[in-house]
Amino acid sequence: MSRVLVLALLLGGLVDATHWDHCADRVERDPAPVSAGGEDEAEISASLMESRRQHRISASLMEWRRQRSRGRPCGVGEHTDGRWLYKTAGELTAHAPCCDLSKEEQRDTAVCGPHPMPLEVHFPPSADILPENYHFWDYQFTSGRSDFLVHARGNGCSCDDWVDHYSWEPARCSLATWNASKFCDALGGRTILFVGDSTMMQTGVAVINSVHWGMWNGSGCQEQISAGLSDTLIGRGLGGANRGGVWTAWVNHFAAISRNFSRTSDSLRAARPPNRRRERTSHERPREGAAPDIVVLSAGAHVSLLADFESILDQVVHQHRTLFPEVKLVWQTSPGAGCAFLPLEAAPDETFWALQTKRYNWPRFAAFDAAARTRFAHPAESENRYLLDVSPLALRADAHPSSGGNWGPMGPDCLHSCLPGPLDSLVPRTLLHLMLHHAL
View 1 (cartoon, rainbow, N blue to C red):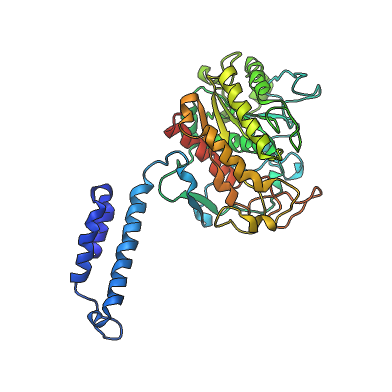
View 2: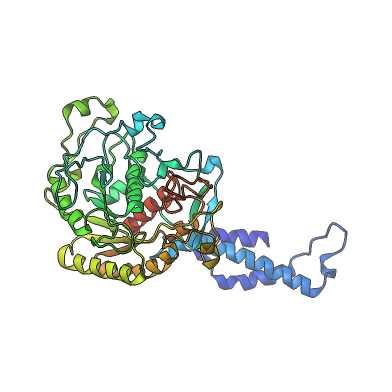
């Protein structure tokens, strides 16, 4: 029997599931093993024998299906069905360290640089978006650099001594394995702009630093990735903060950035180690005056009502169609919220939210994501709209700055993500998967 099962697992798609009936017959015909007590298995009751037979077939068939499907790339949204699997220290993937703006004494300046950062991109201030005292390294905008990692936002570095031991594994398909070189190959000469609230700024930083860290001594494409702050995307106060410019202004402003891209001083470049001293090739430079090729948007933490959130989605879709139809527009779902000591086994429910602070709108995130899926999921790709579904992050209630009971001066932070953590474990992989398998 065991030889039949092994052969079926190895053949994978060559063995049809109907052949398991034949395997079931073999179970009955195979010589029965002798139990430890000396009783022949044939003497066991017929019902128990049948139960064991069905269990063996079911377990083997499940394993066969799992092995057969694991090599198949996940379809749209398929990757969200899975679980966070525990990994030992030796199985963990190395992630970029967190570079904090405030903990200067803990920052590795060889990796994170000084603060303030040396100015690499001469970014022209704009009165309609940014204050007059704006600098490149300030909170409202960030972009990948050739010399250092980008500073984190949103309390990301406050998870002291916390190590993420989990990795997301889809149940019935395969999600792309993170590879910075493959990401840059898929991106080519294109540019990416992330726009959203502080959680989206964290996402942008996670992707930028994942690319840079993965190609630390190579020619990474992190300088083609930027992030701008916009709490509601449309410049309206909807129950929370309303910082930053509207998303369309950030897209228009990106053209001004591209005209002033790559203005690093000779002295800064000459001071770098030889293996980090490189010039951008022509295909890596953004087209002068051009909008970003890919724009990733997200909102929700500063929106109180579902109706207001839906109005954001509808306005964004309309503006994309009329102003930037050539831009590939991606909507990222909520990165999750709420604190717990361990990853959740199922999506947050009323019982979970009853234990959380009532101060915020976090229980509405699931409804927000459902509304976004109706506008950005397949077949919206035909209109250059895509969905970056990161809903597995909702299960990581253990990966927020206050998940371990650490309450800061502003109260508990169960919204932002610990860095490094599941944010830079899942989001870059999912974005790469969209590029490789869904024509992003």
